[in-house]
Image (cartoon, rainbow, N blue to C red; front, top):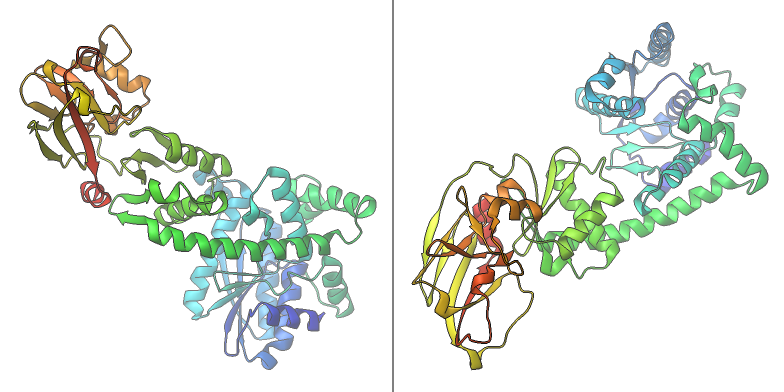
Amino acid sequence: MIQKVLNTIKNYNMIEEGDRVVVGVSGGPDSVCLLSVLDYIRKDLNIKLYIAHIEHGFRGKASIEDAEFVKELGHRLGIEVFIKYIDVPKFIEESGLSPEEAAREVRYDFYDEVLTNADANKVALGHNLDDQTETLLMRLIRGTGTKGLGGISPVREGKFIRPLIEIPRTEIMDFLNKNNINYRIDKTNLEDIYHRNSIRLSLIPLLEKEYNPNLKQTLARMAHIIRQDNLYLEELAEKEYRKWSSKGQKGIFLSEQNIKPLPFPIKTRVLLKGIEEFKGSTRDVGLGHILDVISLLEDGKVGACVMLPEKMVIEKVYEGIHITDKGGISEKFVPYEYTLKIPGSCFIPEAGIELTAEVVLRDEFEEIQGNPFMGQFDFDKINGNLKVRNKRPGDRFKPLGLKGTKKLKDFFIDEKVPIYIRNKTPLLVSGSDIVWVVGFRISNDYKLDKNTQKILIVKKEGKREEFENDQG
């Protein structure tokens, strides 16, 4: 088994001469085997080892005995031991995370802490071939994308390494028993009570017996192929993301024009990269969320949004989407008003857009349908120069297609426009009439008809830089 581990280390470039490696040791057979193997080969590899152990507080006296066992093991091997006592059940209650998620978060935070204190650069973890199989089946059952089907990565972030990832648990137990190496047993691993344990104790034996006796190796090969494919797609997505994203103080802008045509596998990864850059991770963001964001990007109206976990908001804006959070855009109402001369233009900094106005004769005009950023109006119905302002209490207008008037507030509600978008949405006003809710609907009273002779065309012009300046 020693040679197998050395091959794995070499194949995945896990360890280099002079590395300082923290070994995560729970006291169970996998981590004790890992420590024993690394201790045996550390002189040949010219590496220094440390031990890290967390006492989670899950199993009372047994957890305390685990910590004492690891402490004594480190003393016997002459390896410095870092032990931390954390009340994980209390952390679960406070954070709302599942026991597995909470334990994982606490564990990896501790590893980072030990890396710093020991001036180390690698963390070796005891995941093995059986863990890989369990993880793949669990993700497959729950539903996952190609990233999830890549399974447990042998090397993550260049510092977390798994030298036992190609070793089955049976070989680990044989190694420990033949070398009379003691270890601790977590009895809950032998009980069919958790989802992962049910897969380990019931599903895998069934699949190996009835369908494929080499199930673990087969799934491991599949995961390896998928990881390589995923790495290639990630490289392509990274290039596209860097080209078509821009970061402001309150979020990240992604260009609709450039991202919309991308192939689905690249598009989803670009969106995930934006979410990860803004939030720091994509945890709790599933495929359903990403499909909603794609729908927003491709078909959503300006001002519409998709809510993601942890108060993230994906907002449809002019020329793209904005990844932000509820606190990222001010809900405070700040009134504004500008004059739009005919012909002429005016810039509305609060909305990050410029409106331009011109008049053409009917026979010079080619009507354009369905463009939310171009308003076409009967010029003879306009009263002087136009005003551009945001909403006011009591505003009403006649949306195109309706005979009666409607409260602007109700119109925004029906269109599912968030409050912070309502406050800054420009309104084109003639006298006391709302002629156009820019980007949404014109007024029925100012539409073109058979008697129209002169046509007022108002266009929305906007740039990413203007949007970013406004948001930042």
